[in-house]
Length: 152
View 1 (tube, one colour):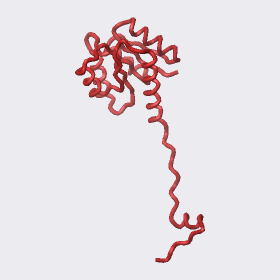
View 2 (spheres, rainbow, N blue to C red):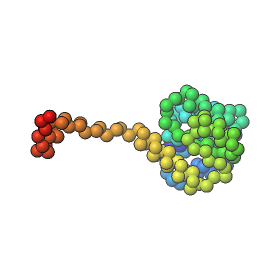
View 3 (cartoon, rainbow, N blue to C red):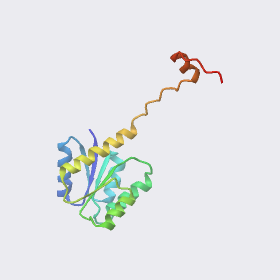
View 4 (spheres, rainbow, N blue to C red):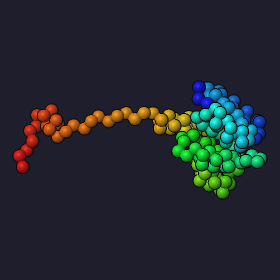
């Protein structure tokens, strides 16, 4: 089962997101604040994070920056789900490393669509590369095709 961390200071929002994700067979871990989010990432190693921006103390943007700074190159997708949909906040989210920005109120189908897309991208990136066939040497190609090299 794929584990998703949901971080929001509002229990009703966490509950709604949890219900939407669990109906689609995701395992949900919750945190109510920034420090709890960082601890949950370390403890549970989720495959995706749904993160509110406006939280008391440590904001979601602070959490996002901390995760990207301390875990550079990790493929942890982060969806910012927030009522702070102004241009400055959106830009701050993108430049801090958010994968997707979804304004509240959100469409549950839209959220699920993004969760599925982002997890698929992580899975594709983590899949081992299929080794390419060894290119044939010129003389092997000529022998197999029955064509002999031209005299120059």
